[in-house]
Amino acid sequence: MGKRLSKAEIQRRAIDIRKTDLGLTEYVRLCPYELAREHGIAVHPLGGLSEMGCPEESVAFYASERPDVWSAALVPAGTGQFIVENTSHLPRRRRFNVAHEMAHVLLEHEFDRVMFSAEGRRGCANPSSKDQEWEAEELGAELLLPLVAAYKAARERRTDEEVADLFDVSLLVARWRMNGTGARIVAQRAAAKRANFRRGR
Ligand SMILES: [Zn+2]
Image (cartoon, rainbow, N blue to C red; front, top):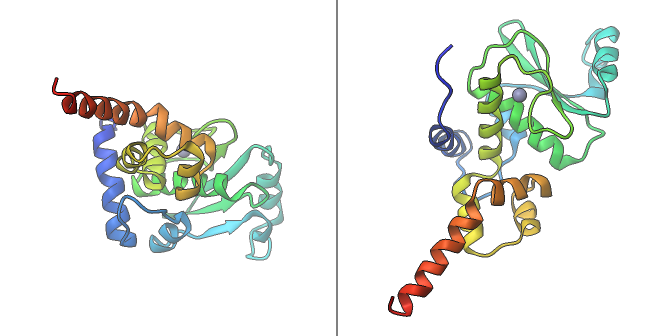
């Protein structure tokens, strides 16, 4: 397997995917379900699996795989994949996990198992490789809230709550993108620099 992608490369790809696949700029909310549709990836609700002809045992398996802790699963099927969603979870969490599973698809990761997005972590509970998981984690987050958009929001002094609403992500994800990436610190330093400059220093 090749080297892990850089953060910069992942940021570039997210912006490209937004623009090419969905006609979106980096500063607006993205719908991961539209992205899945665009790529021919079906997203099935867990409850609808038996209606679509999925064997009862499989449905029972997804439901029993600690149903409280997973929000989305990426399932290999023949040469493709589909996503199963735990629709009992909050929409923002589901959006994030669908974006994460789509990131695996978009990065053309090869995997040999059903991958589950788990509670309390940003990605799959059972990744097939650490590097792949890291890449999907970064790309999934970049798709929903690109770093450049986080910088802009930081310059505009938006709160984490405002950012969460604007991009339809959980508060946890908004905090990660605004603080964990350094977006707010960069914006604060730039503002301090401008203030110093105005004071003639
Ligand atoms: Zn994953």
